Length: 77
Image (cartoon, rainbow, N blue to C red; front, top):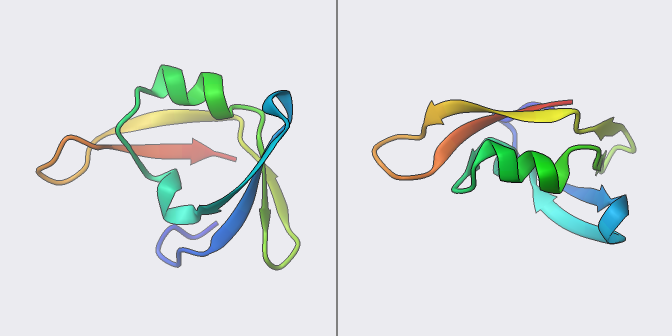
């Protein structure tokens, strides 16, 4: 995944039986804590348009994003 080239992917969260379209830019900025993000998305699958699939192992905080409240995150696939 190249965060400099955002694209639309499908996020599959098995425990919630959910399939969510997501812009991959969302993988790097959030207003939630890393603990909450991990409890919600760790173990989810990401399916890209070209058919490749990645699993989210964990999400780590990388600090604040710009001058605003959102934090910058790193999704470890």
